[in-house]
Length: 185
Image (tube, rainbow, N blue to C red; front, side, top):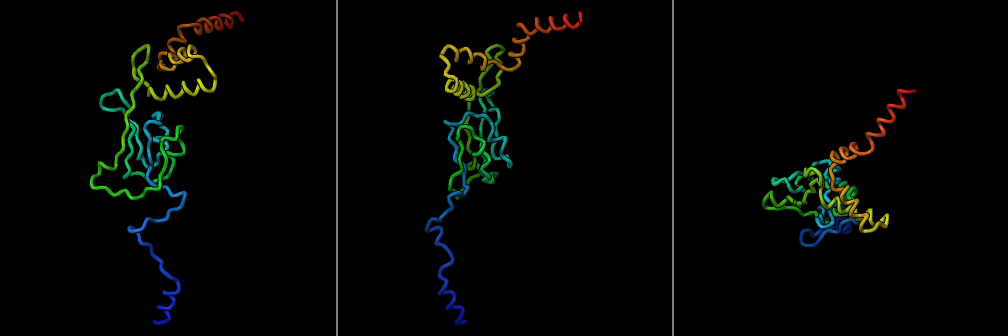
């Protein structure tokens, strides 16, 4: 028994004083996701990448907004959301103490307005995502304000209306010419 006590005293303390002293965490420790709604464009990449379905994108009850929500009770801290976010709006922190009194406190949400099609008025995309795409286009192509406003009209038109517009223009004429040249061949 004396040998055991000597060995224990020689090796020192094996435990930490947590919770009275903070834990030393590794730099790559994955804790609670920190979300910045101002940076988010509501593209849904994080919700698509989340294997535990802790992140969701749904249309809100009013039908005018898309609701981003995170349920920390389902989160497995895999960091996939952080990897796919194009604007770095979500990052995993060092925070791991997530005990709460009420389940509702484990939810985080943010609402984003939906853009309505200029032609038919149908909601189809998040306005912030369209604005982000246009800002990237303006930065990379150095377009004028006039060119950006023309592009905004294209971006704020739903895919169905774009198809109808393109079919009603020169595409029908080109198809007709192609068919008549094949018939004569």
